[in-house]
Length: 440
Image 1: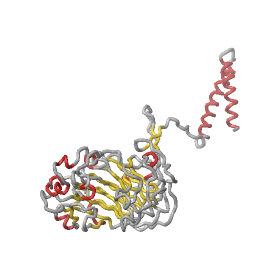
Image 2: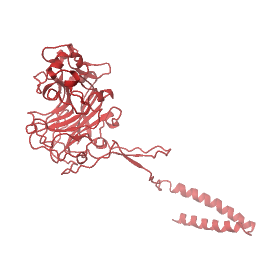
Image 3: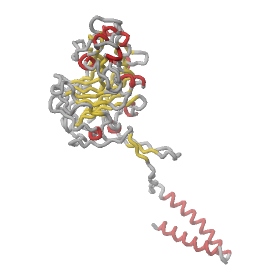
């Protein structure tokens, strides 16, 4: 403060002497004036050095806040706190976990990134995310992709026109490979005509989990009339252990449908997308129980036409993520080229991903009561309970014309048995599947 007072005295003297120098001031006074200027300049320099580590930088106020995904996301207000909380216990063993003890939030919060204005030439500030709370426990990719999976060879539970085969049979028939890009490929048999079922592949992770984060990166999924692919997770004693369909659709659909199937008691709190804080649309009722809805469950359809089938494949695929924690269950989709960097770096930050495609909040469906001990599953069936039932149906996004009209064949089963060439696009090409558990 003494130094500042001196500065003020010098400044006052400077002003007075400056005025005097413009009038009839003797030369001696002008000399004193110039001396004072030099001393004042030096003092100002000393002050800048003295306060260098104390003075705060100016706060910029022209910051633009944007959501990391298009469209503003509404907070969940569907009848309960969707922010999660501590509950139960968590296992650190690879592939297994108990009930989550730490929750990173509802998943409905959005990431805000400060950006400079369009006219500014200075670089924008970069937001720093906290360390990820998710630990990678299982990774399936590259030449060892299939090592962590069991091959299902039983009857198709959905009554499809397929025979699921073991790994050796799949490889010898050209249905299974790691291609030149290091991606896992799973095909359906393309023999021209078959009298019965076509060979196909269904695989299930050896790892089992209750709660967690599942991230699947695919560049191609099966598509075409008669084809019904899915990537999903499932528990024991269906539907008691619950089912979470992350990717599913039939025929030429272009918009993915994410669905859960449970025992009685699990519901959606609302059919409003804004209330649920999702980008998709609820397409059925709010009762998720399989046995009381004819196995319809609670389905939510994506709004983007590149989230499934032809649009997904022509865009180079994308990434699906399913989070299961105390806040509930949520599914995100990121088209190729929009993948968050934290996913690519194996340090996922679901709270920064913006609005989910689909969400089933814990407030009306306890995720650890209706879901437990899940395995992740890939399969491709033909016809069956869904694709066969809607063979004559049109009006779904991508299916403006029914497959019966499009193919000129009256039934799904007759078409797939007689048209092996139509199965050319009935294959999965998967870059990776990764399972994470919450760190404690």
